[in-house]
Image 1 (cartoon, rainbow, N blue to C red):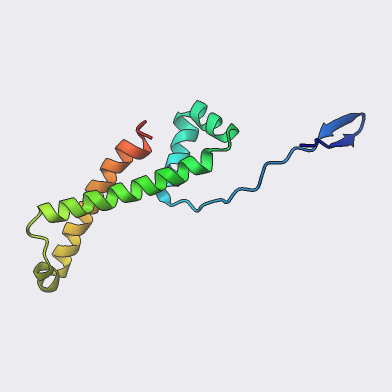
Image 2 (cartoon, rainbow, N blue to C red):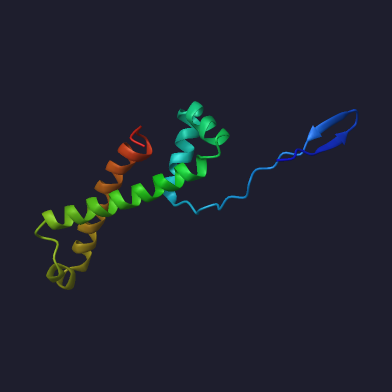
Length: 120
């Protein structure tokens, strides 16, 4: 690897560039994790940033959070015998209320364990 320099005044500064990496899109859980790291885990944030692993970490948190929420919601729906297709056709508002409750429970668990926790 050849290092090149650019003259700025009396100084020679090296022309350093980072290799091009694919920036993967983050969902809301990745962005929440980013804010948490910046405000509460600054050392970990700085370490991931310097090692160029921050985006990779945030993307993996996004995937893990989505998977965990889907699994928890599906398990809650299976465990509640009142959430059925019959209920959906007869009383849509009650069905939506129950599904939203399941999603809220799952999101609360994932936020506590994955986003604001140290599991990752």
